[in-house]
Length: 193
Image (tube, rainbow, N blue to C red):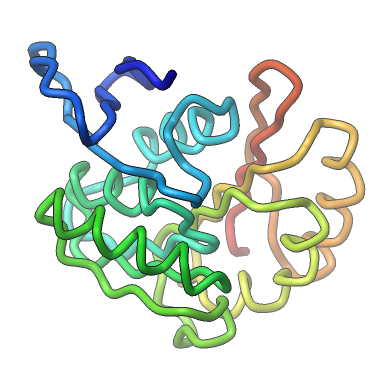
């Protein structure tokens, strides 16, 4: 059974059906994941939340690709992002994320689809918690959608997949700036050169 938990240095993740008090200094994210991915228990979600804490600044634009439950988009908004947009190719996940956005009072655009629907040079930060193979296919779109100097925070894969993903994304002009690991999962950070 999913229990409330701390994530990163700023978040308190709690199931929608619980009313546990939020610890002082924490931002509450209350979600019902339904059939979508994203309770915060998985190491890849935790890695993404920690990376968002490092990169989201007040007023910036954040894209959440493969939104699942919407937990990462909600986190970006709570951290002060000005414009948050999210998408998922699964219509059921989009419906679940929409409900979670409403419950959290988060104003974010959300649609069924992928990164190819976003404008050029529009995101300061892109966060994505999907497989390495899916991420690899998005390399050109990641570069296109990031503003110069923008950052892509990518997880959802094991460290063994990181090498080929780095090579693939560097061919699109993205520069690896950091990597992290939690359990058997990895997160890579890239900057648009």
